[in-house]
Amino acid sequence: MKEIILSKAKRGMPVLLLVILLYVVAIIGTIAGAALTEYDQVSAVYGGVALLVVSIAWLCLGWIFLCGLKVLKPQEALVLTLFGKYIGTLKGAGFYYVNPFCTAVNPAAKTRLKQSGDVDATGHGGTSLTVSGAGSVNLSEAAGKRISLKIMTLNNNRQKINDCLGNPVEIGIAVMWRVVDTAKAAFNVDNYKEYLSLQCDSALRNIVRIYPYDVAPNVDTTGDGIADEGSLRGSSEVVAARIRDEIQQKVEEAGLEILEARITYLAYAPEIAAVMLQRQQASAIIDARKMIVDGAVGMVEMALERLNENQVVSLDEERKAAMVSNLLVVLCGNRDAQPVVNSGSLY
Image (cartoon, rainbow, N blue to C red; front, side, top):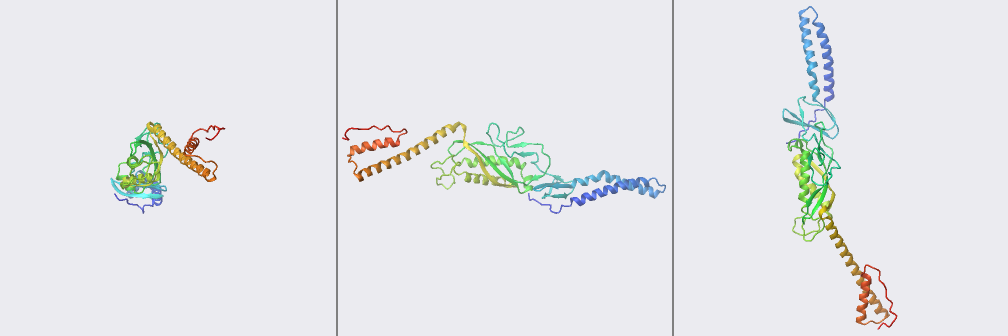
């Protein structure tokens, strides 16, 4: 389906003035026709009847032409069909006149994408299509068949997805999108808003399952066969770009453009969050201990070198080992050392 822009239909005001003028003429004609029918001359009576019939017919049917008047605001479009055939799209602000028998088509006219706050009370699940408001797409009674061309935001619900290591994580995204081809949006899919919502869920699952939550060894996230350091937490920009590209490929036939996708929420699922927190704490403690030991060994080496250089005291190997042990205990311990003063001989 190829979009056809009706650029020569901006003649709404002249048509409106013409219809109003014809109504005024019809009213005058009705009065004049009624007056002519009272004459005794046959020709005047016939002329009066004809004028009266034409005037009354216009008064009864002239409003049909008003149905062809269309008013559009900036960043709005109207897809028109005539007896089931697509004839074109009105785009841009203006006062238009088209065939009064044309019908506007917008399959998503009553579908509203909630811009924010669309996470339900449970905080789980993908974008659902319900009347109760539990999902991010809500059916409303919004009237009108105009298609908005503005940039809109789909704030996707948090979904529970397993990463590449099998760990369940909760993730939510916000997608900025707009309609660029009204004909495709109206006719290529049943409901382009519902279609976008479902494709966002599908693309999110396809991309998230490729990455681990955090950096993990021997994991290839780029598909080149080489392990890398990609992760959901550390490579959020890359992940968001891949999600955007995935969604764009899916919605190309629906005439939609995905401008940006951003990760708005990322966390381990509640059932493993405590375990993963302990794991992270243990890893942090180990790293801290390694740093403390490296520093303590360096300080012990420096102390022995200074004692030897200045010849403060001469220590045999056994005394050096005892000194090293004591210093390491003091430097690596979690509590302050309790010194013991030896008042006797060193040996």
